[in-house]
Length: 271
Image (cartoon, rainbow, N blue to C red; front, side, top):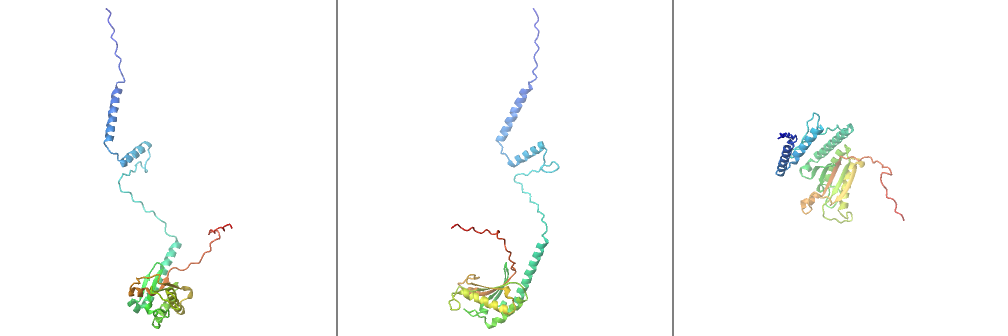
């Protein structure tokens, strides 16, 4: 009987693929389970994504290869102050001149207050600073009789003292007349408008006669439209009857004519 030849077993060189496939399947299942039971942190995800992107593309946020990562919830980085160039010389000069003029205006107002010190002590004269300049507020009880626009003789000297101080300056002066809400109806003053305007004009004429240039003077009558206190009480109405002298810090500018094309004119409608 012939001896059978033992067949040589074929060696399988790809058996490792089975183990590798099992390992990959288990690893995939592990990550699926971990993802299912965890919550994704968007901030950390972005940091991880940026880090991986920088690692593979060799791009960095700053020289040296160190990426800048901003964590979610981290305090924001305060912006650096932007260095601004110094103001132009013309602007600095304009501001210095404006401050100088305003200080000069305050000095004029202080001189007037010193001249009216007795009335200031009685509360009849007040000094107010506004956005336009300095206002000297005088109660009309020391200036005019009730319902009239002629200055009382005792007040003329006080007004001339104010005019003397104002004549030495060059600020525009606005004189405002104010009344309470008690109506007036006389042949000379049909309403409080005429009374307040005439009182302001009376002070203006006295200032002009005291040396203040007419081109610097303006008189306005507001009537009862700008009260500073309630008109329901005697004291409030007395406070509202006043003459205000505004020392204006804003000098009028020379007008500039605009070209005809700068202002759009309405086209005539067809007839």
